Image (cartoon, rainbow, N blue to C red; front, side, top):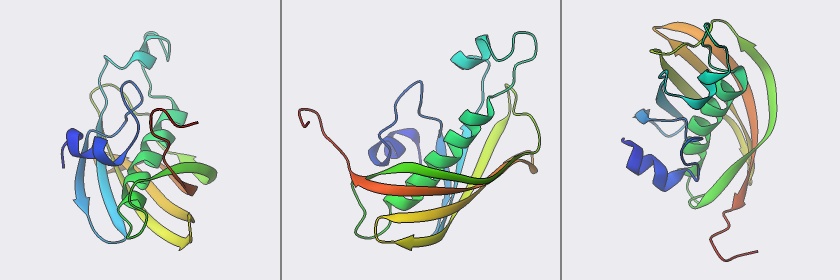
Length: 146
């Protein structure tokens, strides 16, 4: 699934849309890809001479893949997922320009508009990060609403 289709499901936009492609979709699992390039604005300051994708942005990319999965759940279409918790986050290797960050998200549990997802990101088959993300879903505000 390409970026235009992803943008139908996620409210994020440049420079904060951190999913470039959805590679696999199943009922309880999705795999997304982020191409990490030296043109990312955060590399100007993180870190000069040693560019590394910030861990918080790796978590954000993971959350966006999980949000895409949740937004496909029956009855939850058109909802926006908001991050409520990050549990057991681990960073195993740096993510650098030229890497492809592959994230797999699986639903652990759903209760109404609340849930948890297990997310694992890899680069070239090597684990880069993992976490359990909690989320709450809310009706998305459209332009003109307060």
